[in-house]
Length: 302
Image (cartoon, helix red, strand yellow):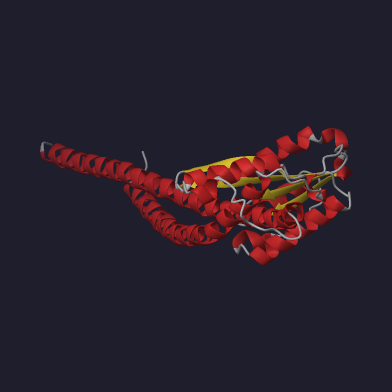
């Protein structure tokens, strides 16, 4: 059995750890609050953009866009989102595992035909360990989501796709559903599926509870110049840029939620361990006192 001094030192050590995890939980909670605020501020713009695009897609207008072109996949790009730091549970390891599964799906293409854009230091390190060369470093974006940075990344991906240097683009990221639920998703980014965009936009409008006629049907009184088709073609790059920014905010918010949950769990475990060690300390102390009393009684009887 450990000595009283050893148990007391361990209790002190666990209490110090509990202070650290508790402080990290409060920091993560504050960052999560700010991240949720950024998403809420972005939502009105995204809803309106999706509403406009959905309304126009419901018309019979024909249009052409290089971002909808489907072709045989010979070269693929994968954009993966993680955090820069650890201590957020299985957040980063799950991303790395998902990336490995996706890479296995594209194994037949060869390493040189799979381009990986890692957003976050942890996934960038994972890409290097897997033997791939990261297509740039986007660690700043992971900590400080910026629409300008997201716009530049989206522009680069769209340019590569239009120039036919890549045939398909996928996204891997965590979607923030609630404080205790962050869902890891794998989504197609390019070529853009307009049917899916319309469905997601309609679902977003329904979730907001907006049942007005303006959001449910297209107003035919609109006069569009030069044409509906050209307007849709102009909207698609904005939708694609907005998508990268939305995913970036989603991943960042999920990171803070995962870290807050991990630190809460660590704090709870520390409290349980302190209780167990305190019981052990009291039992050991009681046993030591009992032994001393027995020694005294035994000595007095001689």
